[in-house]
Length: 453
Image (cartoon, rainbow, N blue to C red; front, side, top):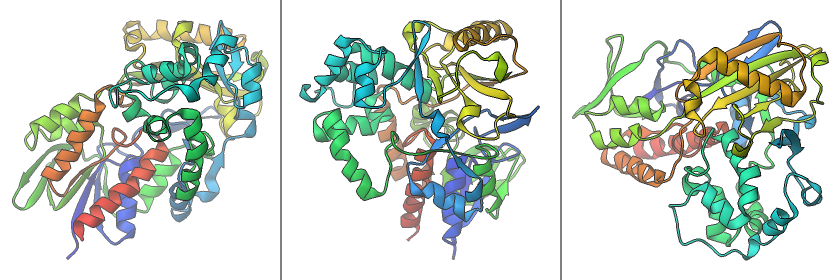
């Protein structure tokens, strides 16, 4: 007799795991509160511009991404970042500096002082920390690479990936591979050299060398294609409560359904799951509710190329905290992928807020947008108003793997042991990126398969 499996959430984590399960002859039902799949992967098209309001791209860190794309029939729609977008910029003193990507460019760059460059060269001789799990990425980087590298490389990088605060993010939980380089190899430079051999053996790419991908019609193509291959997805079916009895797990939905299942997999945000399982485990609910999701706003702006003074020869730029701007950075969307804007136009995605400046949204929205656009246009040497300007606010955007997150992770594992058949996944476990979610979907699938057998 087949086990009945219910997956809650039709974001990329839930859809990918459901896909592996169905492919291996499990009976799967997916419940989704929205009217369409994708979660934060939302793509729109307006006035000749393609707009990704959530993730703009992914890194092909695992062959599973191409495998799924091939099997669901969208491999031919997969596109990779243009070589012209390889360059990344950092804002310093109101000027953009290319982030050095090789030893010669590192020695020549004006982004770092001579003192900072000499400090980085001392990294192989810095001993391991005794702090273990309980150190922030800021503490870790300043100890190993120096303050200036923290301020003008890691601080903006953290805001670009997590919309996070480097003084609060746990190096062990948020950047486990970086942490492992020190723990296993004794240092970052030594670890990067020796760790490359391990990745090759696992058929994985590092995030530094992995190819950036999207789809010709935007990132929502991916979840939509996976969803189209699944036999049973119920949209507009928000779950109101999950309880347990001797027959299994009982899932009550807002439209009055009461579903009983042997196995439940949740892939919804931690704060949503928290409200559903209080009756099962109030302590688990507290852990979930303690995961911080900062607010982030996305501005999408399109201009005529003739309005833009700077050459669009890169991925975009990030802004260190020290520069004190009203936004985190901007992606040059139409430079990276095709079909984002018509030939004589260029499009940009601008990010505001995050854990660094959550209070910025106390400012009236129109005033905030106006100040951000003024700063953005000054940096980019843009003359005139945008031909399109769209705004999307995410009240709770990206889960922050902050200091002490290891305690949450340990309790998540304890919960799954205490409640066999209840599996918890999503981007608050195992990484926030698209690639992380795809890799974890296979891991979760194997956990469910082993549980059943």
